[in-house]
Image (cartoon, rainbow, N blue to C red; front, side):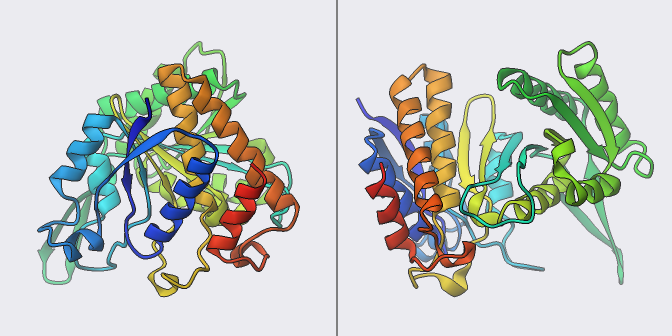
Length: 338
């Protein structure tokens, strides 16, 4: 039987890149059935009273897995981030963003192979802000032992399961001695005696080192805000957000998504790059293979990865990574190489 997954197209270029990813998955024989649900401005346009309907959350809880397109988040006002609400609503506490060079995609560095593991539920993204008095606003950074320990344990388990050599914690405990200090204390406790190298770096010095020589890093463990910033920085090392996938894991659910924005200015113009979402779909298939022992999904993931690698090597690229293909033509180029 086909494995049912939730599909959340999102808005902006989301529906286009989702359609492209689904086409490739179907052509590769992924044997997935899609339960489609809305989030973002598309949910409001369809008559929902919120950008993240409870029916969408309930579907992900039921099926345990989802592929999600980008959703627009207003800047400085409007509704709250759909992505943050989704992670909190499903307790998707661990974000994983692999970053590697792709042959055929020009970048400033070679041999980049990093993974950013980001705590997803608290920190400054808790969204607790207050206007104390006119002209004075405070934001509350939240850190709990429970969240800091479990993301540290997740990073350790991830590193061990995938044969990674080192985990580096990025922090600012020299200034935020309590919140970032707690994050460090929990990480040290979890990694004590572990069979993987462990180190700590202050976040600003770590960013400087990333753009000097990213090869000194392997797995980067970050609290919420740092992980968001660092994962985009790392994407820039290998060609941008159009070539980096993302996944959000909880104990019972996982949501796979591209980390780029919804780019409403190019929506509907057949120029969006669907590769990041397709790479996220490959992560979804591998997750099914690991969690459910499905070798067919693992094999399908390998076929798709080989196909888009071959397309990129042949110069079949979208405009954002140096080529001239549109969304549909790039998708066709990958399908031809399956």
